[in-house]
Image 1 (spheres, helix red, strand yellow):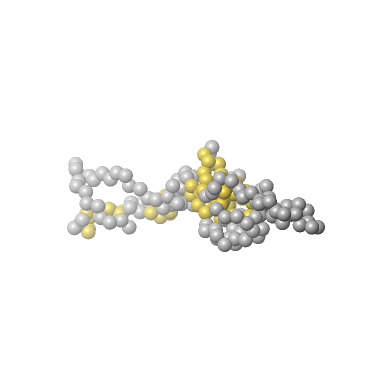
Image 2: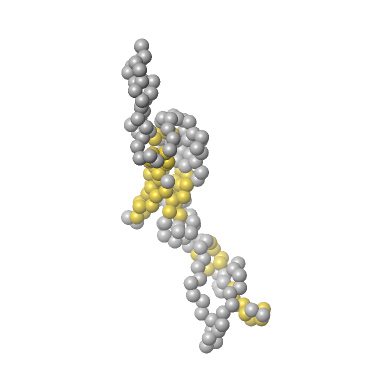
Amino acid sequence: SCPPVPLSPTSNYVQFTNLRLDVAGVGYKLHFAAVGYPSIAVSSASFTVVAGPAATLACNFISDRNRADQPLITQPQIQLQDLYGNLLFLTSGYQVIVSLLPLAGKFPVPLPSPPVPGQPNASLCKLYPFPLEGQKTASLVNGTASFTDLSVRQVMNAYRLHFSMTINNKLIEVN
């Protein structure tokens, strides 16, 4: 429902321009009425508004209280949406890829650890070359890609998960 917009008729008609419906749905009708004359009204036939082209990826909230080497408390769910937030129900052949990005531009470097008798050198502070563990791709099913087993291997802060996919030769991504 929209607020009334008064217009002046010219040549016995009123022309509407730049009308837009942002929410995809079924059964929409436009209703037109003359202000002050409720008996002068007409409604359009029902019509459907479909989602627009793929424009963005949206991510659910991911906890900032995760533990190293443990599955993320909330596993990411990524939705493919149009410019207005409508879910695109694409189901075949599309993959979302996740990577780990350090905010400072580089991953942590281990501090030198003193040798410990009976322990292999540098075994107390091990950093992994690929700190993101788990399945790093997820298929879109009804417009949503669900990751199920992601974890960050080491203790670190100031990082973010980066999600991306390519659709119609266009890269779409979210951090």
